[in-house]
Length: 362
Image 1 (cartoon, rainbow, N blue to C red):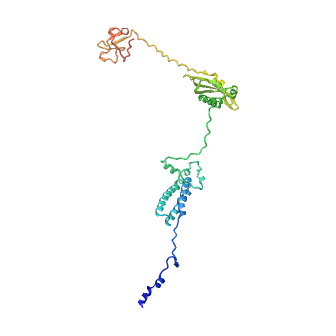
Image 2 (image 1 turned 90 degrees about the horizontal axis):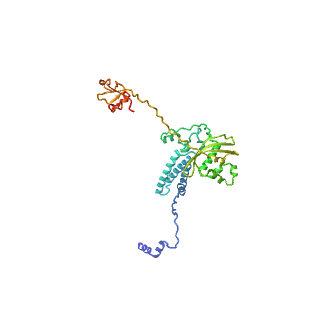
């Protein structure tokens, strides 16, 4: 029986029955086919961490609002938490994003604590006493004492609120100011500026005012001027101003002139009458007289005055016979002669004694 089984198993029908079809034959699909695993994507997280959060960080730095910095800190911490729990991105990218956001969060935290102000109540930060609003300048939590400590302990005091003093009125009159404008235009050789200060009637009376003003001023150019006297008041319609001006004559010389300038008010505006400038007079400096020294006459000694000396080798003559300059053993002096004999040969070498005020030789 076993031999017959082996015989039949090697027959062609047996191989056909147990062989599997190949090629285009019909195949029965398996009952449970495994599905491929779905890979999680983090596109939204990538957009938030690459674009939105950095933009929020920049806006918070520009606007300096405290709320924006706190929002950035919270959203950044939440994004990092989701990234690590969800295993988003590759490990190297997660590490890089963590380092970057850690640095940004440190900067944002420092800004939120010291250099920002809240959105709500921003207009209420002004101090009521007129002092300096350090919160608006350096952040909501910074006070005047903090700024003083940072500046090296400088004493920062709040400015006191007081009524400002009224401005000091200009002591110069309107006519004087107008004349100064005219002279400044003359010094800069601005002919149009000079004509703007001249009376309209004078300008209208001349066909060529530029030529006429040149004829008046000539080649003189003021180097300096000084108003010495202003007659009348601004309520008058005309005033006379005395002025001295140092003029450059354009020939290497300078002269000082005195002007009696007539100022006229037309329609409330003061003007210079150019015709009054023709009455300039030269101011000459008075020569200072040299001091005269008078020598007081001195009383000449009496020719009959008796003078004394030591005949035993004395070199001075004296007016006092007991002069303190002489040793006591030679006193009183034994030698004597008259002042009229002082130039004789015997007394020519004697010198006057200063102790007893002996008279000098003539």
